[in-house]
Length: 185
Ligand SMILES: Nc1nc2c(ncn2[C@@H]2O[C@H](COP(=O)(O)OP(=O)(O)OP(=O)(O)O)[C@@H](O)[C@H]2O)c(=O)[nH]1
Ligand SMILES: [Mg+2]
Image: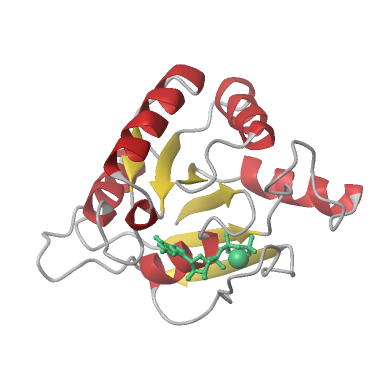
């Protein structure tokens, strides 16, 4: 069982990604920040692999995906007031116990300072493999995506995968990245 935590500021598309990866309408999706109210949502199963794609996982691996409630207010650096200290801790512990982290950045908002700090903590203190995706690329010009890629490369010191959960651009790249890290779990 491979445990994947999806993290990102509110409204970035975490629940939408969880639904896209594992199917069904489990996580509620809404165009309102703070939609996922229950702090942590888990979903077990096999990943949905497009028919056109050779299954990069070989079809065997069971996953558990964790959709975490927005840890931070999208506009502010600090954590949102919605979460108590206790809930915040609980989410952090859940993320720390995962094998792979998907860090989602909203193309229309940019890299969130609080998330940047969390990213560094997860990477350097806990040595988590992290996949960074720039989501909602369908909503911004190409140049903006390229600019964000450069910013992420500089600040997070890694390549980001441009993604759209509307056009599915980059979805296969994300699956491949998951398959890559899954080998080492
Ligand atoms: N255009 C566009 N909209 C997207 C994309 N991904 C998600 N959305 C929309 O963005 C909104 C927020 O998506 P959610 O999946 O609820 O986001 P979330 O990160 O779970 O939000 P919280 O639970 O509030 O933290 C919804 O209206 C989605 O339909 C995308 O790639 N492109
Ligand atoms: Mg959500």
